[in-house]
Image (cartoon, rainbow, N blue to C red):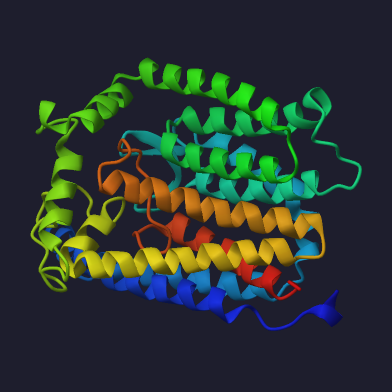
Length: 365
C-alpha cells in the first residue's frame, strides 16, 4: 500500500486552506462586536478559533500521513465511544445545556459536542462495515435494515438533546453511503416515505420546530419571534449587493443577527463581501466536493471509497443546509458552515475528517 502512495491532491488541499483562512477573517469581523460587548475583547472569538484551528491542523496533518487502512482498527471502538458520549451528555450534571439543547460535555466555556464526533464515528464504522467483501446490502432484512437501525439509534440519541441539525447531517451522509454501497432504490424509497412521516412527527411533537416551519413559509407572520432570524439574515444578504459594503462594515452584526459568528456567518459575509464574495466561497466548496468525489471514485478498495463518500457528503449536506437557511430556502436548523463558522468541536473534527480525505487522495489512481 505504501508503495502506491503519492503526494496529497493539491486541488483538494487548496480550497480547505482557503476556506479556513476566510473563516478566520470572517469570525473576527462577525464576532468583533459581540466579543467586545460580552467579553471586552474584539478578538475574543477569533483567538479561540485560531486555537481550535491549530489543534485541527495538527490532527489533519496526522490523519493525512497515517495509512488509511489503519483506521479500520479504530472503527468499532470509535463508534462505541461516540455512543457512550451521546448517553453521557443526556445525564444532568454531565451534559451542559447551551442554546436550549443538552449537547455539550465540558467545563465553563470549553467543551466538546458528542454529536459532532458521532458524525465521523458513524462514517468510519459504516465504511468498514459496508466495505466487507461478503456484505450484501441488496438484501432488505439482512443487508439494509442493520445499518439503518444503527444510524437510526444514533439519530434518536442526538434528537434527545435535541439537535435536529447535526442529526440530519449525520443521517444524510450515512444514507448517501448506504446508497453508494448498492442499496436497492425501491427499498430506499419505501423507507424514505416512512422517514418523511417520522420527520413530520418530530416537527409536530415540538412546538418550536413547527414555529420554524411556519416562519420559513412566512417569516413576516411573526417578525419579532420565530421569523426574526430569517428576516435579519435576509436584511444582511440583500444590501450586500454585488461587491458588498466592505470588510468590517456589516450593520447586522450589531445585535440584529443572533450569534453572527456561528450559524449565520454567511449572511455577514454576503453583506460585507457581496455576491462576489459569497460566490467565491461556494466555488471553493464545489471544488472541495468535486475533488473529494474524484478521490472516492479512484480508490482501489471499497473501504476507502465509502469513507471518502461519507466525508464529502458530510461537508456537502452541511453546506447546503447552512446556506439554505441563511437565504431563506430551508427552515432554521442550527448548522454551522464548515471551516467558516466559529466552533471548537465542529472545526477540529472537520479538519480531522478532511485530513483523512487528503490521506485517501494519496492512494487514488
